[in-house]
Image (cartoon, rainbow, N blue to C red; front, side):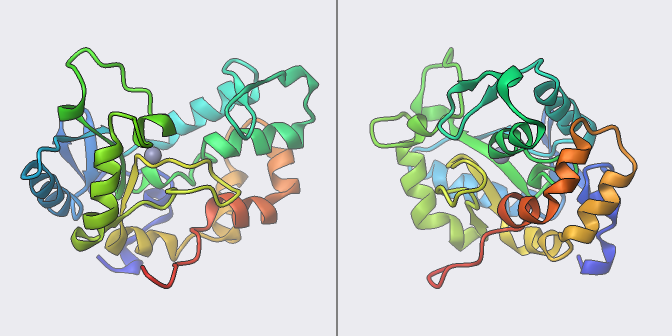
Amino acid sequence: MTKEQISDEMMAGRCEKHLCLLERSVLLHMAVVDPFRQLQQAAAAEGLDIQVASGFRAYDRQLAIWNAKAEGLRPLLDTDGHPLDSAQLRDDEKVMAILRWSALPGCSRHHWGTDMDIWDRAAVSPDYQLQLIPEEYAPGGPFHALSLWLEKHAAAFGFYRPYDRDRGGVAPEPWHLSYRPVAELFEAQLDGAFVRKLLDNDGLSLKSAVLAQLDEIVARFILPPPREKHE
Ligand SMILES: [Zn+2]
């Protein structure tokens, strides 16, 4: 897949023709399915049963999440995950609080089909309620072994975790895995111009507050972190 084949619609989760069904209700980019299965098999040999909680997410789904938070229908959380009183916040503060935990619609890495949230089915009982919180992946949590395994082996299969630690933007998401060879083609097209075009024609709540601080938002929450030396 080359850069020219990635349309704005694909970038924004408004196109599904490049996707493939991994399993019931989980869609991934067609170039990601095989590498993911290889990763899954290698992990299985070490007793891990990697499952996808969420793969591709459509634009409309992300818009519904955003608007529910913007309009106070879903709780807003502070940097550490504690509930905020939405009525006490200015619009620009609401925008920053949402972005810590939820992507701007059209800018989620889940729109690309290259990224997924994963957990280890072998580590918990069948009735376990998955929460996707950092404690589950930290020492003492059921998915710490998965986290350690990924740290050691994910790169050999082309995968990495873009939100593995707190860089001051998106909150840490140790469960979020990305297939680098394809994701970086999407990343290359992410910039302020793309986001501005996106905001032109949709029903985003708090749009003017987003536009007023767009450059900071793009730098902190949308552009990928710079690659580190050891990567
Ligand atoms: Zn995710």
